[in-house]
Image (cartoon, rainbow, N blue to C red; front, side):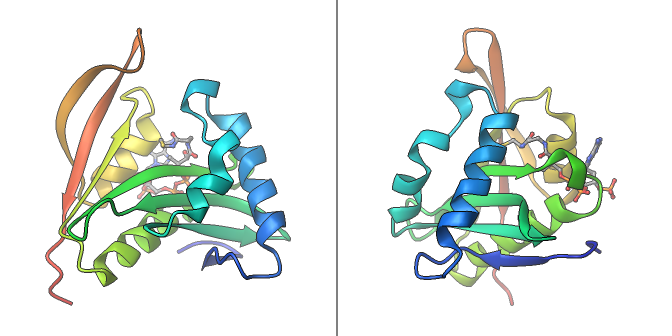
Length: 159
Ligand SMILES: CC(C)(COP(=O)(O)OP(=O)(O)OC[C@H]1O[C@@H](n2cnc3c(N)ncnc32)[C@H](O)[C@@H]1OP(=O)(O)O)[C@@H](O)C(=O)NCCC(=O)NCCS
């Protein structure tokens, strides 16, 4: 269960589009190192037709977001997941990840993949909780001294 707040899919035509992107970019800059941050290219990312973003809106601000894309009709990527520090451990990360998975499930995607720094224990634990498995360790994925787990989730699409 999440606290106050709703999970919404970002729509380019919605009245609060700019405000949501502003909030997301601010969170992105605070949480992720420059080379891992999408803050400069968010608008470009969001223009792509084969992708989307869900966000949690609490007390008039974005509390967290998950970004995903589907390079093919069978395969999707979770490209970002973040919750602002003051909203952590209240269920928003899990709700966002579940919402992103559901969006992929609706598109009949069969496999969702992602990369995550193994030192991001809360994220790794959350991915495992929702059924993601570790595929491999990709050496130097983020930088010379930062590796990544490649993780995946098989979807049954039985619903
Ligand atoms: C990972 C992150 C999104 C989790 O968000 P959150 O809203 O705090 O997570 P939730 O409250 O929904 O917790 C859901 C599950 O995540 C895991 N988790 C969350 N915080 C955790 C922590 N501090 N330690 C261990 N596991 C944790 C647990 O499995 C938890 O389930 P539980 O409550 O049954 O134990 C958040 O910590 C974050 O933004 N981290 C920085 C950005 C990041 O690492 N992103 C992923 C890489 S792209």
